[in-house]
Image 1 (cartoon, one colour):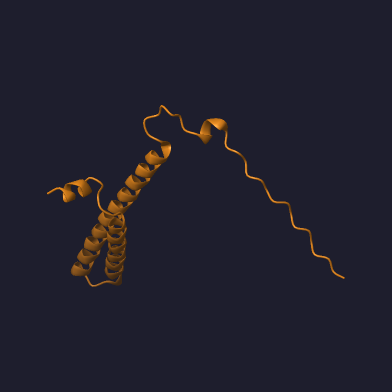
Image 2 (cartoon, rainbow, N blue to C red):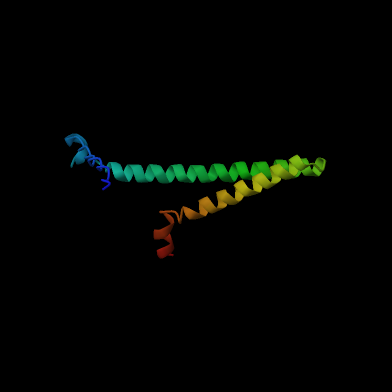
Length: 107
């Protein structure tokens, strides 16, 4: 009779220190709200970088193809177009601006 190998014991999670477990009641904004707004700002900045770099590469590639028909120019154009599409998609996934919602409700 073959016996199965014993399973290792489960690891227990460490508890957070008491000073990090609960936020202070007198603080102005909770850290989770600050993290969420910081995360949204980083996502918007990344989307803008995609848009700028994609459009610059697209224009550079079109200029290279216009001067001389080369495979390098076509590759740069294609790369710029793909990055531009990713930037448009990423920027569109951010959703509407927070300040635009109240103004749209009250014309």
